[in-house]
Image (cartoon, rainbow, N blue to C red; front, top):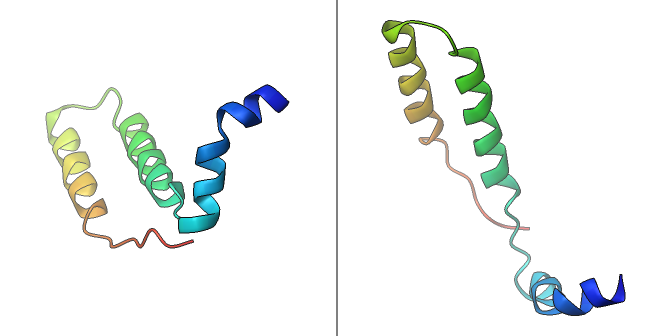
Amino acid sequence: MAKTLQAHRPSVLNWYDFRISSGPLEGINNKIGALQRMAYGYRDQVYFKLKLKLYALHLAKFALIG
């Protein structure tokens, strides 16, 4: 465990300086994956609606603030 912490030390210490999290980005990726799973096996018209939902998802504004 000590070797792992030593290898990732700069990244861990940077979090205390900047407090930026990738959590909102991971949430968006999770939503996209869920929408893709829901659209699996449907025809093109429904898939087009999925694309519209994905575009609407990116209209939401997120702040990368800890």
